[in-house]
Amino acid sequence: MTSAQVDQHGDRPAGNEAAGTAQAPGEGSGEGYQRGLGARQIQMIAIGGAIGTGLFLGAGKAISKAGPSLILAYAIAGLVIFFIMRALGELLMYRPVSGSFSEYAREFVGPFWGFVTGWTYWLFWVVTGITEVTAAAQYMSFWTHGSIPQWAYALIFTLILYAVNLISVKLFGELEFWFSMVKVTAIVGMILICAGILTVGFSDAADTATVANLWNDGGFFPKGIGGTLMTLQIVMFAFLAVELVGVTAGESKDPEKTLPKAINTVPWRIAVFYIGALIMILSVVPWHEFQPGVSPFVAAFQKMGLGIGAGIVNFVVLTAALSSCNSGMYSTGRMLRDLALNGQGPKAFTKLTKSGTPLIGTSVSAALMLVGVWINYVAPGKAFDYVVSFATISGMWAWIMILVCQIRYRRLSDSGALPRSSFRAPGAPWTSWFALVFIGMVIVMMGIDKDSRVSLYCAPLWALILGVSFLVLKAKNPENKAFAKQS
Image (cartoon, rainbow, N blue to C red; front, top):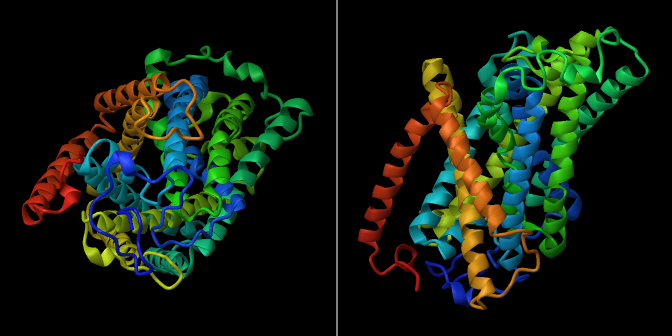
């Protein structure tokens, strides 16, 4: 048995095989999981991963900063996301494993980087889960008007999603399918309504609705190029979680077919759900009428005179928040188990339920999400915002490692040291280098923007914690290959 294989109890020797002895493309991960995610579910997980509260709520702030040029920002960022996903796809077809980018970082960069990537991605989803389950509870007050305590909704949502993730991966996939369906239906509905207003001319917005709104009011760049650049961190935050499809590799029924197909839909998903939706909304409603903190979808419905708009969007945003929390429950358990299987986390995290889901890892993550909800009530709001801001930089770290690993893998596969992937990224490695430079520029923009700068303060502290932890574990386990540089 190779070190990438496990027995029915989920145990395997610590460490990872050397690059030259890794599994061949197309082989199963052998991690003990059940391949319960079908093509229909993988497709909707991929679609849903690109549609979240960053679009439904965050776009309002971005529009006020950049105006119509936000469309261009989403288009360029969307191209970069496609490069990232194709890089991930190349790695997935080389070796589809549930540990995904953490496994690849361990193999192509070194044990320490796999350790950092795994724990950072885990923290990203814990923090995201905390914020999303709290947001979901707040959205419920739209209908209950405070008659039921907010903490009660947070508790109920967390327990339900925790149970769903423990029962089976198929149930997780089915719930995520319907969550994504709601989001997709809402955006497509908005696009069709806006198209009807522009062509037929119904609703209160018909008198001022025109495509010329995209350039008439101060031009396409009303805040200048600088204003557009300053929205890049907001735009990239909206795309966080698009890489989640990579974590499903170890549980996909037919990864060689479903994953490439899902990844290749990234361009049209971005074109329709982001660029298409923004073009339509900004044509119907002039950009200067949108306000930070107000969903552009709600503002558009109000402008149209559709009173039910606020309730519809609130339901969709609630769905988006629960979808994100559901994804967090799923990915955190898998990341902790991957770390444990490689000797870089507590061995207890390797335990699976009879249905093949990570028991201890998911339970610990869910418990921390509940603690986070409690912190949200007892700590000052600003302090909690500092924790939330870390999600952006920690999420982008996964993208950075995907690109670095793909560049190294491409060099090894081109030289014949490793088998070539059946799903090669077009234009690589140059497209991967371009994406890395773009992410670097976004990080610089985050440093310039006082509202997002705090996330860069948190990153060195987290890096220090991980560095010290790795050295301590390495000192306690000097013979463990999980802490030694691979040959």
